Length: 105
Image 1 (cartoon, rainbow, N blue to C red):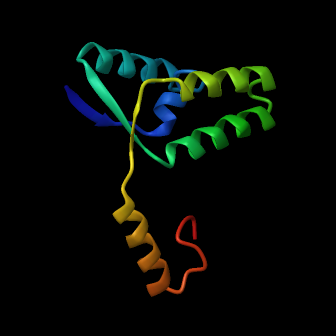
Image 2: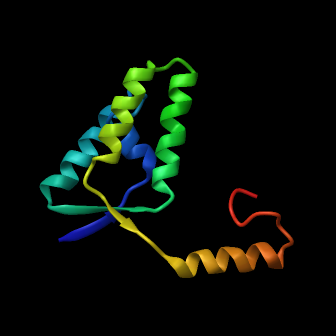
């Protein structure tokens, strides 16, 4: 089985209508036909939660639609890739460049 890393916006677009939703849906369907395993980074959980909430706050979707979209996204069959060495490297770089955080700084 082949594996492909997908960005959170591709999966989000399958459940929240955006300009490229039809393309994202077609992409995911095509990949599923080829028996492809979807891989996402651990950060995926936080990204999708933040984006869905932002869509609700911007009144693009209702609170209920947001909850349903988040449930659908979190229940989608993906493999989470965990890389502890990446966390150590991020910490080292933050220290090297005197950054206050190791993420989003």
